[in-house]
Amino acid sequence: MSGTDGKIKRLYKNATVKQALAVRGATAQNERAKAEKAVDEWVKKSGK
Image (cartoon, rainbow, N blue to C red; front, side, top):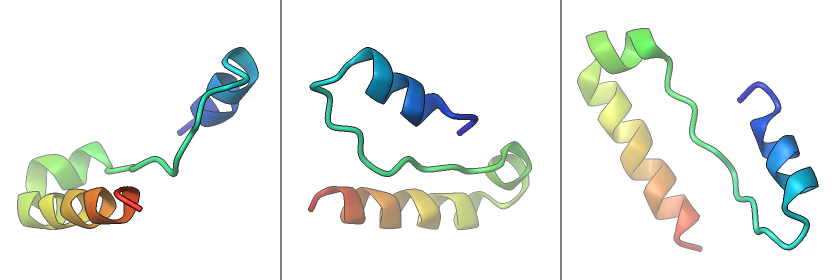
């Protein structure tokens, strides 16, 4: 995520920063089922 999570942690000391989801643009455009599966799995994990 190009260090975005670290920037958020530095700027917002009290924020809870969870694991991000990274889906490549090519995957989102050309392999929709794979991208949807990744999103579904991420949402399930982030509910913890």
